Length: 135
Image 1 (cartoon, rainbow, N blue to C red):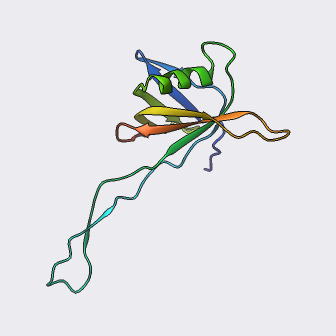
Image 2 (image 1 turned 180 degrees about the vertical axis):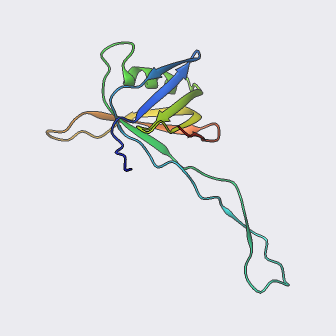
Image 3 (image 1 turned 180 degrees about the horizontal axis):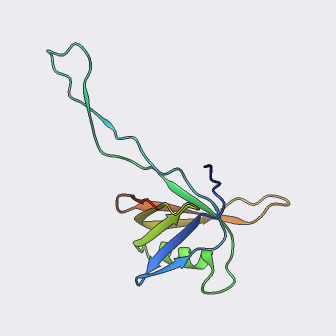
């Protein structure tokens, strides 16, 4: 069965309660390749490696801009950014699979264009591993 990214949801956990962040437009790639640690010795005929640490890079989520009230997606994320607040997030896909992680968001309004929607991006600075939960 094939799935679309449509209906994927990003939740933020503050005070233990999940809040759906409205107007999510794009989700980043999630996953990484570990760095290679060279453990080749003089007796080896080929290079040998062991896995090192993982770097997920920048996790950039794109949203349609909304700052109409205190529950608006921009206002919620910008407040966390202003306070360098470490919070839990969960992405849930249409099949029920989810990824959970802790991060400090950094928020910026995206460039505007003629006849284009006003959007903003939240770059997540990871503070934990990314935990995958199967449906």
